[in-house]
Amino acid sequence: MLAIRLARTGKKKKPFYRIVVTEKTRPRDGRFVEIVGTYDPLRDPAEIRLKEERVKYWLGVGAQPSETVRSFFAKQKLL
Image (cartoon, rainbow, N blue to C red; front, side, top):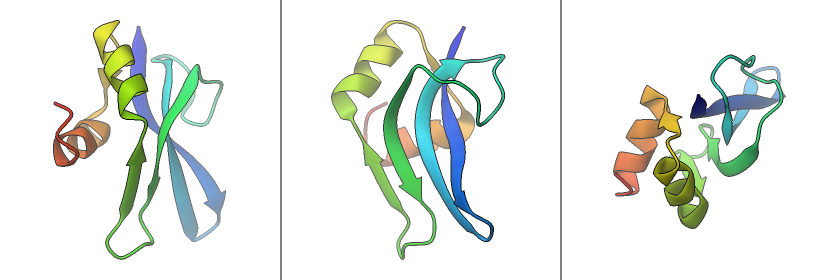
């Protein structure tokens, strides 16, 4: 089953996240299928960038977003 979730990158104490499509059983920062956006919590306000067309495609083929990513979609009015 595919999941849309966060994968952490960046340095210690300076988090930066990619919003990725991956297999649900893979590790958090493991191999992924596609990057569909980014999340920068250190910006004020926090910056969320999404490739809306690709997100809609993956949701259409059955990928399930995590709770955090679902809240991002709600803010961007994708769900």
